[in-house]
Amino acid sequence: MKNIIFTLVLTLGLVACNDNGNKATTSDSKVVETKKTDNTKTYSNVKGGSQVDWRASHLGGVQPRFGKIGLKSATISVNDGKVSNAKAVLDMTSFTVENFDDAESKGKLTGHLQSPDFFNVSAHPTSTFELTGTGNGSGSYNSTITGNLTIMGKTKSISFLGNVKVSNTEVSIKSEDFSVDRRDWGLTYNVEGSEGVPADYLIANDIGFSIDIIVAN
Image (cartoon, rainbow, N blue to C red; front, top):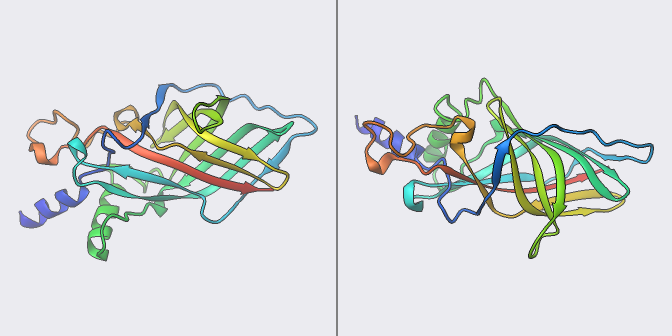
């Protein structure tokens, strides 16, 4: 019983607290239109340090958890100096936990996050984000980025702010800190209102993300 409680405590916090970034606009998936001309330039060499950061917590933002997810691949197309299409494949087997100092705690939480209770990595080793459009940004961000986020085979469209920069040699996309509701992708482990689950074990609904990708040609 003691070991079960310890494991549960470590696994709490898949989802971000309310201050874990601006809530992304979420809707049904959108059609991806391939925009290609004779002048389309393709970038597909992912540079070191490209990653997605995740943030999570119990209800109310207590006991925060955080880590990184590496990229398996990324391809970005540019027409007339503007990004027209992009697809990033996240390697869910690279999922890391960085809020603990000891290897045992990191390993237990990582294993649970990759289990069928959460991301079921053995069945779904990758997640994807595919761009469907960009618009004007606001504040310190030059773009609104919209794309289809697929987790465990389920796809939803999300929109968030970011900075998109294009040069002759590389394209960078760096997002704001944003969050999504995990329930939209069927991640319902210990959601608020779960019958028979003590309040201390309930997990907030929001997962926080930030994207930092640089792709060279």
